Length: 320
Image 1 (tube, one colour):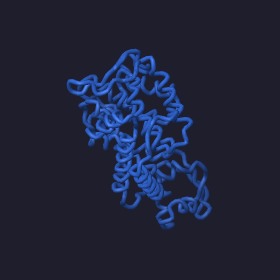
Image 2 (cartoon, helix red, strand yellow):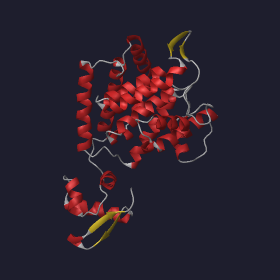
Image 3 (cartoon, one colour):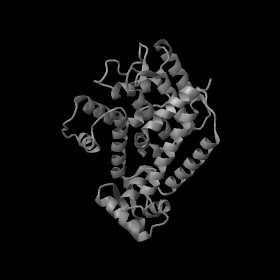
Image 4 (cartoon, one colour):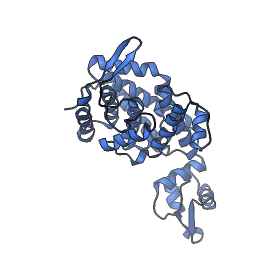
């Protein structure tokens, strides 16, 4: 049985807007941003997701940890960041429909922070807001069955992936399967579900938008709890995704650079090619620009070439 939710006119409008933006992103070759932008967005993702949970490290400190430099800060906060770096580095290795994969991600994310990392909780939990219990999670004995049902929904439902990712995020938070780390796992797993359908989501730091609208995030979770339906949370998360895609389009409205083109091309072509093949992908550039790009790619060790003039052939030997 599918988790309860309704498809509202607001949800339909947001899905249309998101689909249009993804089309623009693909047309502008922005689904595989430059390495610099990827790194910046990964730092924003980690900083925002952990800040929501009270982590005090700055983006600069997280950058230093990614670069394997020493950072002075609370030990717990440093461990949280190192774990997040480790799990996001392995993002492509996880299967979004596998509970085993899900538990493995939690094991990495919460290593050294709790003794039950990678294991569903065995005790009851409640979320306290002020002096009241804001949410009483289902009994621990029910967690494995509820999570199994949720993964079956992911595998078998014909629903749009955009909606399924939001439903999973909300339902997982409602079940609260772990003693700690539920929030960051919900956000991480939604990214994973989305990126398996469209690679652009690997590089979209929608956690940044959640961090900026944190009260709305918890309000949407609460409203879904009260209504017994994930509809309010779906609407909130689609707004977040839509805004995040808008930010990418605004940021990259400039003309593609040589670096952008070489990065995109090297990650989409895995066979031998020539200048015409390169220009077939980037229809707006001149033959002179294509030649400069390819020469730079050879000089940087991205491509190797053989032949001469119009008979020159290239092969990718490393990613930029």
